Amino acid sequence: MSDIVFALPKGRLAERAIEVLEKCDIDCRFLKFDTRELVLTDSNKQYKFIFVKPSDVTTYVERGAADVGVAGKDTILEQNKDIYELIDLKFGKCRMCVAGFENDKKTSYGNLKVATKYERIAREFYESKGVNVDIIKLNGSVELGPIVGLSDVIVDIVESGATLKANGLTVLEEIFSLSARLVVNKVSLKTKSERILPLVKKISEAIV
Ligand code: PRP
Image (cartoon, rainbow, N blue to C red):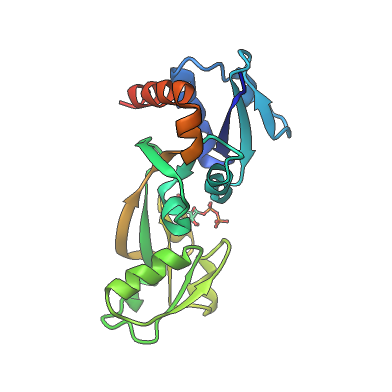
């Protein structure tokens, strides 16, 4: 019987994901070791866990290199991959926001420069308002945008708000709320349903 390959996002979501897996009676002690190994197998040899960049989870799952994974709703919406999103895991809660300097609150969006890691989300948000904006794609530290004059505002996730506060920025508009989701490869759900469906059920029960 082949392992179920489970893609876990490195970083802030991993710890919470492991907590949920432990509640599902999956032995996760090995996942807590301080190791540089990127592929780890559980003691019952049922799961192979791979640790990937959070924004890459959906790619591994879409391509079938992983059967299941944990991905932020921000990544799912931004990447729009051909995968199933099965469960709201209720952790990793944060908000997608427009942020900038408090006194820069604009009533009109004309010529607004928007720095973001989330090009699609930002474009769709401003399109829904019927305004053209200049979207500047960055890969991180987007709070720098308004500070150094690269952009007027940013579209980014806000969790504790500490990063905005530390940089003198504030939320100007909330776009939507986010959380982590369990995502599944479409073929795996058919071909490995006898193993994936009970796992999905256990996870659903573990998060209530
Ligand atoms: C994310 C996000 C904000 C920050 C928000 O960045 O882009 O910068 O977290 O969290 P907070 O509201 O709790 O401060 P991340 O830590 O993923 O790093 P990055 O800027 O390199 O993408």
